[in-house]
Image (tube, rainbow, N blue to C red; front, side):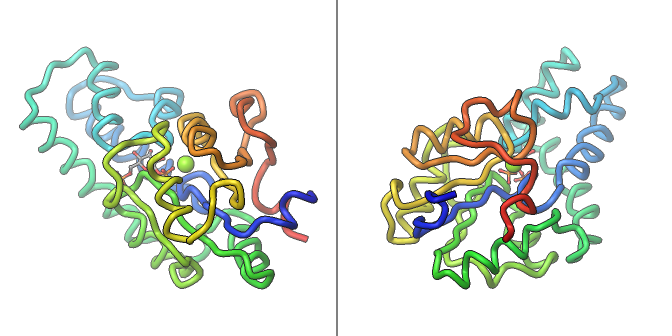
Length: 213
Ligand code: B16
Ligand code: MG
């Protein structure tokens, strides 16, 4: 715990760390798969966590054994996003994961600077819906980076926007790709979720509520 007492910056992934938007991504992707006439299971959905929208679509196309032109891919990704937006439009503060807001407030009270490091292009909208947007000193999301996790770009940009060195920061991540991205950026990473899946993280906790004191 000593390390967490001395950090100057904290970078948070969104889906799976602060909110559970994976269930809405799942519903929207499933609807697309049903249109195509194949089943998309919750186990398949695990492969999409932390992965960009276009890469997610490519995985689904692979599962369904389909071939799409680049133009069709863009159209289908847009269609999925419209359904996803309808789901997340209903979100409110009750959808924050346990301990998320409390932990952010606790870090802020200690003077720790806070950044978002998410692959989502809908991140700002979601932060506003659940009422925590104003707690962030920097927001790096899918609209600001060109290389998806496991590339370190998102976390490198987060440290830079906070004006801190990677060695002064910590990343909170629920996805394997995100943990690899944090390691590649040289940031200490705390995995959120199952230790068997997140074995590359420096430390794993069940949720942010385990860190609230
Ligand atoms: P969007 P994170 C990721 O969020 C999700 O885990 C992933 O399933 C999704 O495809 C990706 O955002 C892109 O989201 O379609 O909203 O741009 O975990 O990086 O916060
Ligand atoms: Mg995530």
